[in-house]
Picture 1 (cartoon, helix red, strand yellow):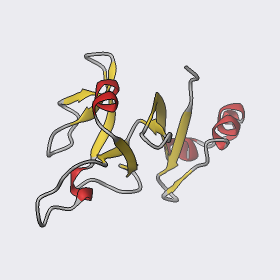
Picture 2 (cartoon, helix red, strand yellow):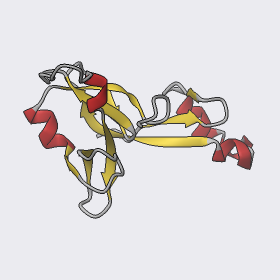
Picture 3 (spheres, one colour):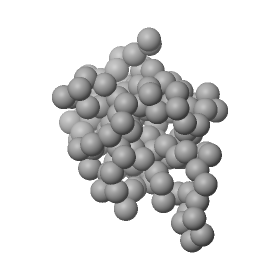
Picture 4 (cartoon, helix red, strand yellow):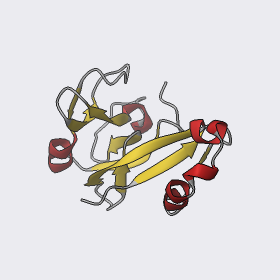
Length: 127
């Protein structure tokens, strides 16, 4: 698996294009401490969603086959992707609080369900 990252700039509230990460790494000595600390780095999980989109740490996924009850919006079912240090794997948070304390194995969920990236926790904060 290729080691990839993307970055979100917390000062400008923008996602940096993936190809800019190489420039950041190569030119890191030119970044000021403030510029570097403004970046939120997200690792590529090695997985893709049902549409072939790469899944990164902090992405939110939704199940495209969910049958919803009246009044419940699909956007309400967003679950964030996170790295579980304890288990040494990528997980999908299955809690209402989305606090990364409990989750399912991302690889297994991607086999069992049709999940797609709906955003990320930086550009589309979870409530």
